[in-house]
Amino acid sequence: MPRPEEVTLLLNSASGGDPAAPGRLLELVYDDLRRLAAAYLKNERNAQTLQPTALVHEAFVRLVDWQNVSWQSRAHFFAAAAKVMRHVLVDHARSKRAQKRDFGQRIALADAVSYPSGREFDLLALEEALLSLERVDERQARVVELRFFGGLTIREAAHVLGVSETTVKNEWEFAKAWFQRELTRGS
Image (tube, rainbow, N blue to C red; front, side):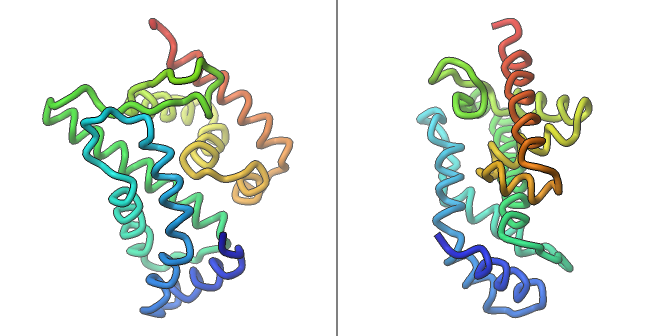
């Protein structure tokens, strides 16, 4: 795992216009991003067409294409990566649903929601629930995004949000319970 300060220096170089920085940055963070992508996709149906490598590359292209971004830290970068990966996955699921080939991507929430292992939910249902939570409590939705989609630790999420670790822990526990209720209604 690269040192956080190495990632931050490369992020600042990329933001400053260094044309070599994005390539070096990708080399440094690729394994972490791929691990996150693989975790998102591990419980997908066999017909899944989006592979972890493709998810990482699509997210990275969107991330480094941002103009005038002032990266604060490695945690800030991974928070942004979480949001971008989430959008790539949802866009892909919507596209597949629109093609009527299947009923959307499914993702296991056993790690994020206290629910029997192996239970899967439709990714678009997860997105709708996350947007609903965002309307109720924006910070809790952000905690879910950072922890579940971004793979950030409690400490990293607290740093990104500018709150205490205890606050993140409490928000995370509440959000998991909220998702369990929302995603299991009618099942």
